[in-house]
Amino acid sequence: MERRASPLKIPYTSVRKGKRYFEPRGRMLEHGFAPKPLGPDDERARRAAWALLEEWIAIRDGRPPPAAKLPSKEAATIAKAYPRGSIGEAWQEWITTGEWRALADSTRTKIWWPAWLKRIEPTFGDCAPDTVTMDMLSDWRARIEEVSGLDAAHKALKVWRAFWRVMQALRYTQLSDPSAKVRNRQPAARDQRYTHGEAMQRAKAAWRLGYRGLACIILIAWDAGFSPKDARTLRRRHLRLDPQTKRIVFDKSGEGREKTGVAVIGTLSKFGDWLVRRYLGDFGADHAPESILFRMRTGVPYGESRLGGDFAAVRLTAFPGDLRQLRDMRRSGVMEAFAGGGDARDVSEKFGNSIDRSNFLFKTYNPVDLEKVRQTDAARLEGRRRRNKT
Image (cartoon, one colour):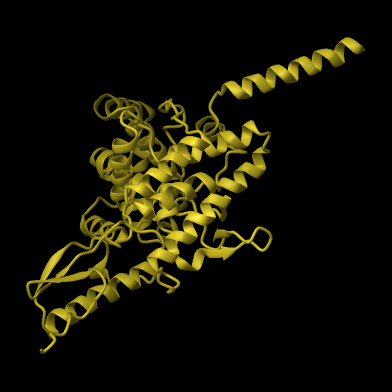
């Protein structure tokens, strides 16, 4: 019996009923790639697929794309006409600099772009920086809070203040920021937390339900204190072996965290090490340095929305009524470290943040806790005994 040749495997494409389809995902979508059919699976379609793949690899590796291939938001913004010396023209210049490209993808796509496109540009895009007053900014922020909520207003003004410093550096203004005296109230920090037992229960439930990549990500979020994005984007080249414990560690000291670029190294508990080794052994992980380690049940790397969706599915099935999120694992780990007497500088290095210097981060990752109150009571009693002896 004659065997039919299987379709040529080209990343980010699939062949269905003799036709090839381009299927970008994750960061590719953020950079302007869109799903599209490539036609019958012939030489022309395969060449088109390889061209799209090579274009993505160039962008992923930090090589500047051709002007025609800029991400859609950048291309659309640069094509607009703004008055000379305006805030919009300053933005156009800013997004073509190396410093803009050096920002973490999540910082650009989740913080800067929404604030610019939805908040700053519609109101101030055509204005010269020196014409903007404190009253204008105060009213602008109040409208955002009324329509879109406190969180959107807080982020918008934070981006405005950061962009004002950029405009000063680009010589669009040398005046002080008119928003300096505008009060920028921030939403209350999240305080949801897990215990160690609860974290283990969720990892084991995910494993039993078939979400084995998710189970490993949950344990890494707990043991290593990685954010969900840092955990789901771990690659083969991040794997190391601790020479002392002989357990797996994840070394991101070279490129740093996805959000901030701060160097981190993630360690695992005995159970976490066993589970990750079991997963990698069963899955037969690709040994290519850039291969993603932990994947969905289909074998596809996790995107942000799919990771949250799978975690919610496990939560609904095994723990109905629980509304805590995967990101709360990280905060719980920080609280454990401080409850055990951890030093702020050491905790900052472990979790890759500036909790030792930022009051806001300290409150976010270390909210008021009964155990800390008990420790303070014990410290007061010890101090009282010492004072009474003198």
